[in-house]
Image 1 (cartoon, rainbow over the protein chains, first blue to last red):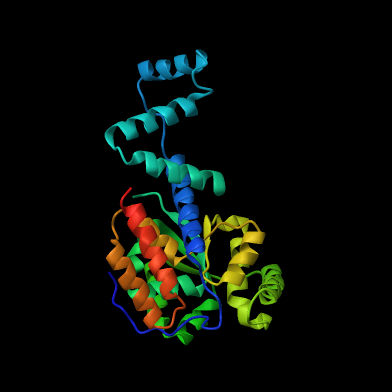
Image 2 (cartoon, rainbow over the protein chains, first blue to last red):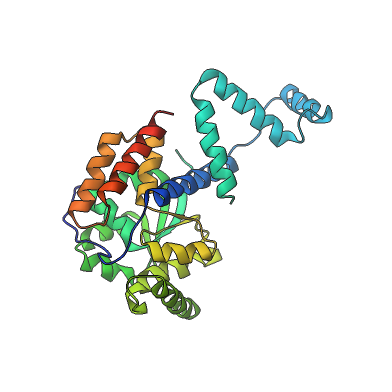
Length: 100
Length: 184
């Protein structure tokens, strides 16, 4: 934590944020960080898992590999972390409101 | 957490972080903060010269001069901001406008712009730019459970005591949001 310094007011005449603005700021930040993290998730799985992923798509259960991974991770997340349902709801809301 | 953002910032969000001494939260989520070169003078004007100098030396903040076309764009943006602001003098909005012009430079690869002032945010939104602010960063820290609601209140009150326009109602609402996201 850096040292606190006396710093004068900025834009004292201007109207700053509302709670809604703050929430939207949080959602857009969450969405952008999720996008960044998503760019760095390689599909480094063994061939048998790749085959299962392919089979789920081929059987029409999921539309594509991304959907297989997304549903698998969400299911696992909810299974090991019960509050995950609410976290997912908020992240999905951010994704639809602030598409990158 | 290796995945961090590249942002452009106006002075306001950084001044709030300086006021409450939580630059560490910016470092947690941000890799580079681009600031318009001219805004350094504004940091100095607000007594934050040493703080911004520290960030520049560290490399977290990087100053960017504007190209001639961007200066012209910034002047137009300042006029747009002035039209929807309580302060109708475009010159008053030039630093926010320069940050928005900088954010519009594709080569910068910035993910978000940090803005606090409502009129400037409205113009940035109309231009399709993704926006966040210092409180958004605080809420993200709540989500990640590195900031507790009681700390959130303390930080926002520190900023307010130094003149940042965070109303009691806003602080109350944001602390409730912090509590909600912390409990998820």
